[in-house]
Structures are given as structure tokens and as C-alpha cells.
Image (tube, rainbow, N blue to C red):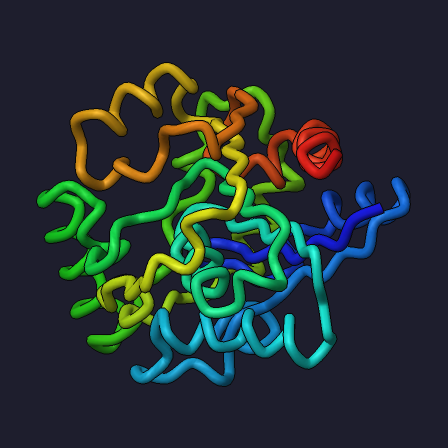
Length: 244
């Protein structure tokens, strides 16, 4: 059996992984869903100083303090940067990196840099007008899930009630990577695009440059960008298979 550390993306805490965590534990795995500083039940810790480095430090601290080895380190969306940064710090503790509808960005690139210019401008405006200049409010979840057949009302209610603003410095601080993580196996769970699209973009788009090569395996799970809400059982099955 394997040890999983699950890191959520923007606006979410470890609670978002609950159905996946339960399913993996039923399969005999050890699972650590992690809530990062300023998120979930730790929302009171949010400050303008909470940034990407802080979140990477917390993942590293968990791996070291719990003396975890051969870890399957799973990151959703923004957390792709977090798990890559943590693995770059302590690659000897990581067996595999799993990117859920995301990927590792190049050294020097931030999550905000990945977004198109119009989205960057819209988010910056939201931070200034509705986030006290340092928080990105959660999106209109029901609107974003409209037309997604896999997303039920209970999931929308849960994510609407429990999501919290994201400290903006986590989005604007660039990734800093030494390359120590580069030999680790990578597994991509693709919800928003296909394997062919990912490998094709890796050849021409700098932001996707790390998403091709023989270190990668992929599984396609066509669904909402948040598969832990829309198809948690299938996601858990893919994560289970990824470690075998």
C-alpha cells in the first residue's frame, strides 16, 4: 500500500478531498489531506504574507515531521506548483508526483503568469475591490458548474459554503526550482484537456514544457476542473492505480 499526501488548489482546504480520502483509505492506503495556511479551517491564519513559499514549506514540514517516505504527492490546480516545489526540496521522500488537471510550471513562472492577460486583469481587479488588496475571492461556483452533468447540488453547496479567499501572494510569487525534482516520475490526471493536447502544447508553449517525456504517464478523466467533487470515486481509482 502507498502513502498519499493530497494538496488542494485555490480556495479549498483538505476537506475538499474527503470522498477521495475515504475511498483511498478503504483500499488500504495511508492518506494525508493537507490544509495549507490561510485556507479551510486555517482561514484565520490568512495574511498578505502567505505566499507560495509558505505553502511549499508546510508540505516539506509534513513530510519531514511525519517521517514520510515513498510518498505519492498529489496536487490539484495551483497545488501543482506546491508539490513541485516541495519535491524539489526533498526529492528523496517522494516516489511520484501526481498532477490533477494541472502541471509543473517552469522556474520563475507564477500561477498568475499562467493565466491569459484578460484573466490576470480581472483577478487583479477582484483582489483590489473585493479582497482588501491581498485576497482573491472564490468564484461563483454554481455559475461555473452550470451545464456540468457530474456536479450535483450538494457538491455546489459544500464548495460554496466552505471555500475561502485565496491569499494573492500565492498566485504572484514565482516558482523557484533547482531541478532536484526532475528525475521523479509524474502522473497527470487530465480533466480539461487530453493527453495528446498536453504533449502537443509541451512542444510549443513554454508553460507546458515539463509535461512531455518518458517520465510522464497520463489518465484522462473528462469532467469539471474539480474532479474531487464531480467524480471522486473515479479519481480515487485513478490515484490508486497510479501508485501500482
